[in-house]
Amino acid sequence: TGAAKDPVSAWAESLDAQREARTIESAWRDGSLATERLLRRFLERYPADPLARAMRLRLAWLRIQSRELEEAERLIQDAARTAAGVDLDTVQVLRASLLARRGQPAVALAHLREMGGRLVDVETRELWATEAVKVAFLAHSDDAAVTFMLAWRTVVADEDRVGLHERLQ
View 1 (cartoon, rainbow, N blue to C red):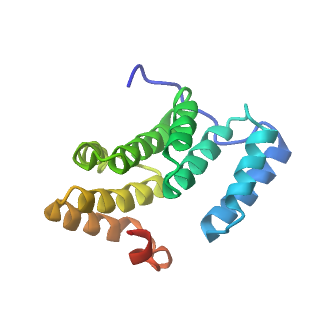
View 2: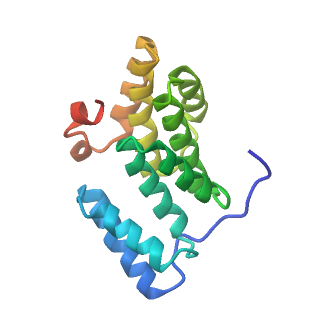
């Protein structure tokens, strides 16, 4: 994936952008239907902000869930150009998700296996574990599915386990 990149700021460049990002974080955690609108508004207002990369990745995740894979891929590529650290980990998880949804679940599963155990960000670990379970099922790998379900059980908070069956569909 190229040379290591310097760490990037987890803060917005302006107080207004930071406030808007916090609103998005809250909506994201709550599963608000307004999240996509908020993400798009942030990207329109602050396209070059350091937090725009993470916002693009969240929007890409929503596009993957909506099966709008071309837009998701474009957003992921945009974010990947400057991604480092947590954002780069998220890029890799989302790329594996795209592979699986494009009919390459075994390849996606191999990528997700490589990532296991090295993710430090809680949200990225939860995304990884959830996607790994889905991809293992798509790859018809029952043993991997069980392994990833156990990993999922350890990384996802109790309150976030509600609705598991719906998310795995």
